[in-house]
Image 1 (tube, helix red, strand yellow):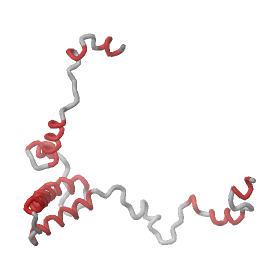
Image 2: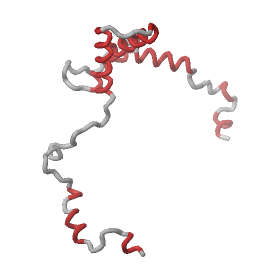
Image 3: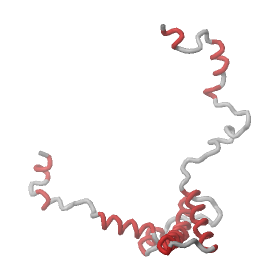
Length: 144
């Protein structure tokens, strides 16, 4: 009912459609490989100095290396041969970059206090004493 009220002429007044798969693939290729469009979107993005950990900067710097390694891997599969030393090093470099970049929420500890060897979370402090003080150890012993 809302569709008829808002768009009485149907698709003539609502010319919006989902993009074709070919367009989606083309845009994806332009954004994930070095191109003018990618350069346009990278323009004005903050880039940390080399060696300073910054996820977006690391990602932008990794793209050309990973693209080159993917081309090498594709060529190797097509030619059914083993990589040369230089090709193997490039593929290993790209794999190492990917492994670092895909890590999500990897923390040894959230705060410096949690990193201390004798740290006990506040919610767990006293838990052992409370459990010992309880007469019943488990619910099912008293449920019957």
